[in-house]
Image (cartoon, rainbow, N blue to C red):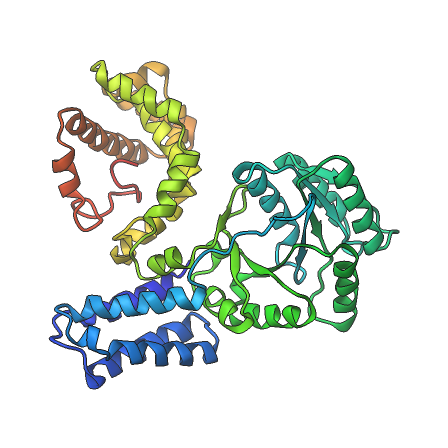
Length: 460
């Protein structure tokens, strides 16, 4: 997400290096570049105008003018304004009511409401330790109810059955009563969508809202629709008392216009964003962290939280004990590292949160391919246990057998073994207390020579 914006803004900041001080004249070109970057990211024009005016006012202020490093001072101004534009801090769900707390999901057809209901149920169960029931009031879309039932089963949420002959309000009221009887903490209502905003749909959803009085009414919108997402959110907000927005498909949106426009146009906070297809691919929206990602400064806080949540602690401890006993790092350990990367959202998701990665050459970024991890796993899985523990025994004939078994080429086997040896060297340095030396190699965010063949930096 935000790839294009990050590239443009990164170049803009680099152009400011060496500038002694910022004036109206030399900041004019910079602001024009920022303006073009935002427009290309499909940010709404009124939002762009306001943003540029505010940045200009602060950038030529006393603090920046007297700064020893105008480039850094300017980027801080942009960072602060981006954060303010998107809402300053994360607005969490307000579930402070007598259970069950009702959450109603609204949005257009195809925005990903039903999938997001499942993700939110999963998030509430895992993060907030809440019991969750879900119900579908979509009596129009074929198989909508069955789809939600399947999603509920996948995440372990309770499902309240409904059918297309019932009225949405009656379904919602019956589900509420059932959730109360079963002592559920939260009831999430999935509503019907349309291909566009129309009076009939708005009238129906207003009646549904009035029948259950939800504590949270969330608008689910496809981020890839850009500024149209913000305009649609505004139309829904005019009809319903929205409490927040969930952006979906942000992993497929390289522009980010929706994220930068929604809050400014609707006044409603973005509470979550969908970052993938899996049931756990939902993140709380933190404006300050997103601003850092846009400016190529990474998102260390989210990265640490994700590591704590998704890394297999037992496997990590076993690997540590293995080193303490003086045992070597083998290909099975290497394969485990790939599995951990996949849990973290793949290489692209990982690099997006790592500081310094915004400045990586585009050629290196293009090599970051999560399919490559799958190929490497297939290669290692095609080896015998002995070959995984003692890679030096892998000769020409063994390579041919492994390549045939994994559907790869011998060159792929050679690349894997080369990367494995790089990883082994790093592990030896760590064992000898050479962590400081190893970290120096990564100064600037990239290992020496950039990304190795295949798009995997040594250590992943």
